[in-house]
Amino acid sequence: MEAETGTVEVDLVQVSGEVAPEGGKGRFEEEVELESELSIDPIPVSITEQLAAVAEAGQETIAFYREHGIDPSTVRGSLPTLVEDVELALESIKECSSLVFDSSLDVYEELLLENSTSADDTFGPIRDDWLLHRARETDAIEQLIDERIRPADADTARRWYKSLLLSFEDEIIERTLDALATEPDQGAIGGLLLFVWDDGPRFGPRAISILGTLLATSETFEETREERRFVLEQLEEIATHSEHAHVRAAAVEALGQIGESRSRTIFETARDDPDPEVRAAAEAALERLEGDR
Image 1: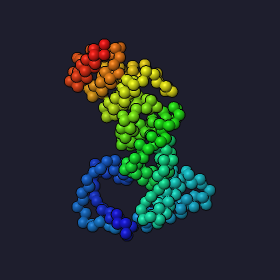
Image 2: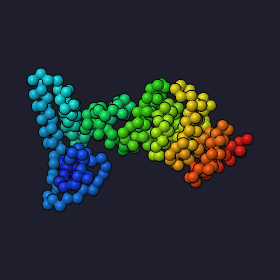
Image 3: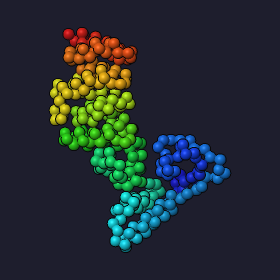
Image 4: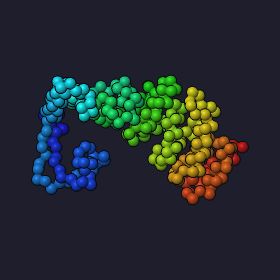
């Protein structure tokens, strides 16, 4: 984008159906390399002009439906919200030559904590995308956790942690787990257990490790719906029944960190696991038990 002229250069390319979005419209689900033999140079496009045209068309459409007595909120879902989004974008560009929306913690609380698992737009497609992009480039997630979730009451913290951990954005999940690994919080137990029950190899091991730290450092869980014994049983179950060796190893390691004698049979069974990582974790856990006698 050229800030001075307010334009971007758009390449027109011809792509196969294998990489194009379903139906030929929409966004690409992942980054792809697009090559084309079309002999067309990049076309300069004015962002302001395009947004203004979209806003004008949207307003005309909404006015038409209002004139004919039809609720505009039923027309193509969120058309009024989209038009409002575009108008705000235009105002933003006029004021500072770049797209800027309110990115306060109040806004992120509504977007990521109250509406993160909904398929509906919170503020509008343009603002939602801009806010998510900004969250990836700033410490907005960490601020939400430290300034909003940790100080909240138990039920609110539990719900908000689940919102982040069930987010559609993998980076948000990873950064939430990073924050919890640095400073575990009992309010996140309900959300962390979801990864244990899902038995997923991507986030499961990290969630298990955080739960292990909470169990190892707390004799009781205060203001949580899950009792400590229940959480311990979930780790013992996944340590022996997970389909993924990396998950089993993480669970055995976490149980070793907790160091309760009741887990001895889990460790002895894990010594015969077909995966060397699990066997090594079991041996280390047994050695730790013997050393604590």
